[in-house]
Every structure is written in structure tokens, then in C-alpha cells.
Image (tube, rainbow, N blue to C red; front, side, top):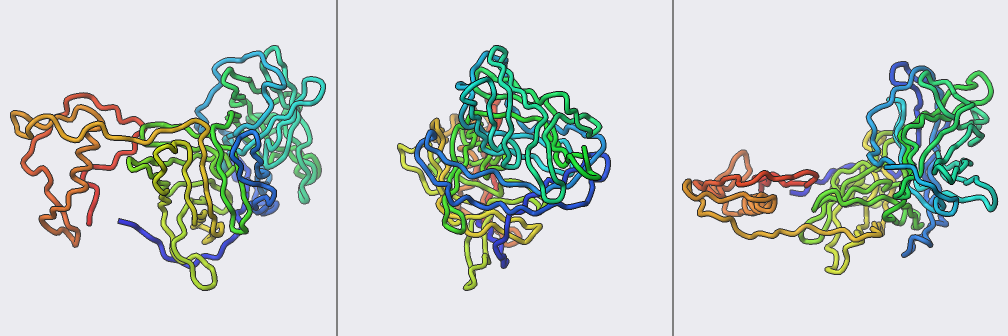
Length: 430
């Protein structure tokens, strides 16, 4: 059954907000700015990774914090297996960076990043390292380490000069140490053990942090995401696409904020994005929705939490597309305007699920029960029950069936369902 929500929403800016503080003490309530997340008119959709142009990462709003920092459970699971010798040329190019906040009052983040080597020497620039700002780093080619020293990162109208530096557990800066990561054989760069922050350099808030993070990992992109914003401009980011089970994809950095979403692949070669959060900021959680209806004023009046893609061609195992969608922040009663022409492209093909069985072994009797020998048999059972239309009664205005009434089943093997999005047996009502 399709569920639609009715409302009237006027498109609003996607507000960024660090809201920095700490887990145990209240953060300062002083607000800095509300930088809107806007699409770059110069961005465009392209076919190849080498020609991909991306939108600058969104700026975030800031507030100062102090006190003890608490590392929350790690969100990034990628870890560099070993340090390897490298060169500036080998680490150059685009990455997807993801990091976790050290404060409970703030939000995880990330974006598409780019490493550009200097023409001479062993220094590199990491573009869009934080909030669209670049940093300089030193590359030790022999040991495969990259170190970011304390340095200027941006200037703010309220707080003045801001520097990036290592952060201590008590929230104070360590200007003499460096934020150090290692280059792995798979091309990723692991800064996950480094704690770092953004610090005010002048005034009464000098040496207080406005942002604090850890668990940073830069990974080579495995796909790209493009769409047109409400102004009709093309926008694009690099993403990480991983097939986590036979019917699930995990996509990281879907909206250039470092967050993950899950996409369910269907046997009919469609896909479904169901109530997925693209990112969280000071306004709240921004959820991906399908736009269903607009009023004469152009305001959104009906939407669905489910985005469905059309069936992919038999020879297309790399691209998912959809249109007429948006991001909704229910807490702020705002959405991102009508977005169109979304296209998610994997650099390596994924696979759609299929069913290898059509019947059960056995007779369904107590002596010879139907055998559930594999995950496919369990899926087959769900299919047959959930698709049964021979209704035999009504319960609270819902019709129901009694599929396999009097039949016996037996589980013949252990079944590994790790990561699989399974539709429960008997889940549907009409």
C-alpha cells in the first residue's frame, strides 16, 4: 500500500550548523551564521570520472564550545590495512572524505575532496577538507604518511581568523602536533585516529573550538551522483557505492555531506529508496522524498517517503535514475525545492537479485514437509504468501489469506541473511 503525506511546504534553504560543544557540558548558544546549501551553476553532469566537476562543499554555521570531548562509536568502517610508500602523483586526485564529530551536540560530515600536489617539493593541498576550505599537508613518500600542521583555514565575520589544529581531550588546541594519516595499499588515506578541531584565534573566544572531529577517512570514489536543482542547474558529487548484500547498495556522500543511505534492489530491476536521511544539520534531519503533488503556487502539497526507480535495461548494471524528488526537513517544515534528473552511476557494475528456486522440495505433510534449504527458499515462501489474493476473511477492515493452511515446513540448513533486506512473511494487507 502506498502511503502519501499531505501538507503545504515552501522551498527553503538547507541550513548548515555545526552547533559545536561537547558531550558532557552545554555548548555555547552563540550562533554564527546560517550558510545556505546552494548548488553551483558551474557544476555539470559528465560521463567519465576524469572529467567530473563537483560542487564546492557547503559551509557550516558555527558556535564556540569548550570542555571534555567524547569520541562516539565510529561510523566509518574503512580502515587502512597498512602504511605504504607513495608519491605525490599517486595520491593526487579525487576522494570521498567522511568524518565523525567528537561532540554529541554536533553532526558527522564529509564531502568530495581533492588532493593536488605542488609542482615542487613534498607538499600537497587537500581541497574541501572542511566546510569547503582547503588545507596544506606534508607527504612523507617513504613512510606513506600525510600530515596537516596547524594552519589558517578561513576567516569568519563574527569570530575572525580560524585555524585548524590537533585537539586535546579537554577541548584545548595542540598547535605543536600535526593531524597525521596513512596511505593504504587500496589508495585510501586513514586519519581516523587523529583528533582535530577548528579554533578561534582572536578575541574573547581565542583558542576555543567551533568544530571538533575524528574518524576521518579519505577513500577513492567508486561512483558519482548528479542531479538538477530547483533552479535547473546540474550538480554533482563523487560517492562510494558498495553492494552489501544481494539486494542492497550502500551509498556514501549522497548529498556531499558524507552520510550513508541504503538502496534496495528489486528482482524486477527497479530500486527503492525508503525514508533515507541524506544529512543532518542544525535544522534537523533532511530525508529524501518523492514529490507527488504541487498546488497552483508551486508549493509541495503531497509527497511519498519512497523513491522508486524505473526498471533498468538488461545491460545496465551501473546506473540508477529517478526524478521529481527532494529533501524534506520535517522539523523545519521546509524542503529543498523540486529536484530532477537524478543519476547514480557506479564505476563497477552491481548485480540485481534473482531467485534460483520456484518450488519447494517435499509434499508439505508432517512426514514430508516443505524444505527451507536456502535464503531463496525463504524468499519464495514470502513471495507466495504475500502475493496470495485468495482472501478468506476480513480483520479490522483488512482482508487476509490462509496460504499453506495445514501444510508443514522444515528448516533444513542454517541460513545467512546478513545484510539482506527481507520482506517479512505475511507482511501485506489489502
